[in-house]
Structure formats: C-alpha cells, structure tokens
Length: 186
Image (cartoon, rainbow, N blue to C red; front, side, top):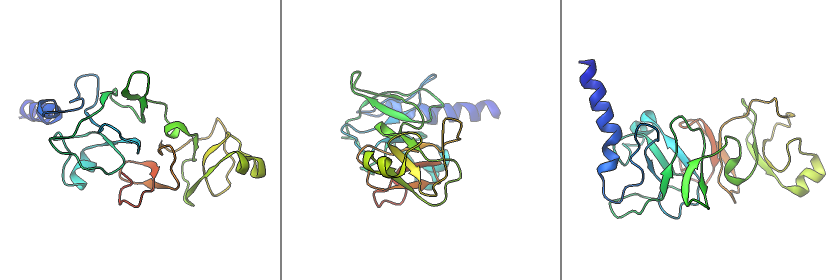
C-alpha cells in the first residue's frame, strides 16, 4: 500500500507538466511553478495545506504562484521557473528571464529585517526615515516594535514585493507579504 501511495503522490506532483501552457511542472530537483507572465506581486510557495485551504492548486499540487491574486486558467502564459526544492524565497532574474531561488530576507528587491516574533506589524523605513530614526540594517522593512536587529537576529521569511505600500504576516505560508487587501496577501 505504501508504494501505491508514493506513486499517487508523485503523479499528483507531476501532473502540472501535462497541462497546456504550463510553467515548470517540477521534477526531481525543482518545485512546480505557475507564476504568470508579468507577475509583479512577488511569488510564494503554496504547500498541500495551502492548496487544501484554497480549494486546490493549479497543476494538482503544491507549487509557486504569483502573489498578486491573478486568476490562472488554460490560456495563462507562465514565466520560466528554475526554483529548487526547499527554497524559501523566489525572485525573478531579469537577465535569465526566469524565476529562481533568491535569498531569504531580501524582500523582493528591498531589505527585509522583520525579526521573528514580531507582533506589532511592519513598516518600510526609507532613507529619510533612516536619517531620522537610524536603521541598523539600512533601508528596508522592520517590525514597528523598535526592537534592535543586526546580523545575529533571527528574521521572519519575507516575500514582500517591490513598491509595496503595506505588509502583513501570512500565517498560511509563514511569511510577510504585501497587503493588497486580499485574504491571503496573494
């Protein structure tokens, strides 16, 4: 029975590669990825719990999706993806024109220094804010509780897109995301 369950799980995981206009259906090294062309909301990974809580996932299982909440259908054109398994943060590489695994905490082009356990919300501190208040890590997103952070601080996962006006913590994907007024931030 375990062998059959493993095969069923593998089929669920790879079914995305059979769909027309698919992104990256995943495989041994890379996660499945369905980030639509022109995505400007950053990308987030939706695991089985996320898929189940959202009525299913395009491609039949866990994958990377654009955080902008755009609908996906059979006519959607997807960007290329090479996001390796266990990646915590994906970013679009303009040179390769491909979504790749980025560095956790870089917040989609802006610094992200929101410490683990932040409960007071987060805000972006630009150069003027840093001049007025001091920024221990430079311009970027910080928890608004004024707790000092540095290189030894444990930071939360950040998937905040560039040009974001407000951020919120998404419990479903355990990350800070751009608050665009959508229930899950993506």
